[in-house]
Image (tube, rainbow, N blue to C red):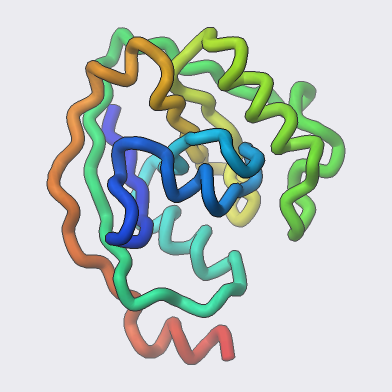
Length: 152
């Protein structure tokens, strides 16, 4: 399986430090995870949907995950009721933190809030299987001006 994160070049793509400092939908501050998606396009869409000012230092990384690595998937009936809320609810952050703490898998598959027909993958760098992931080098990623203007 190949997954993609897009993030700031200030943080390595392979340790979860960025998400630990700037928590997302599936983690609280201090819990290192790596947010990825099944395509770089979905990553870009997630960033645009976040509504924050776009950074100038984005990079995209390709992560190759062996096919025999367990992927834990949250089914619709396992999602917190407010999982799709615009603001990241504490219920989803607790769900993600509990998953990291339990250590059952290195990958948590969750539906995208901007396109629920596609999946995002939260990676747990503390899981032993994480050492088997192969990270490509960071490549610069920028948004075309026409997409930047749409948000203003």
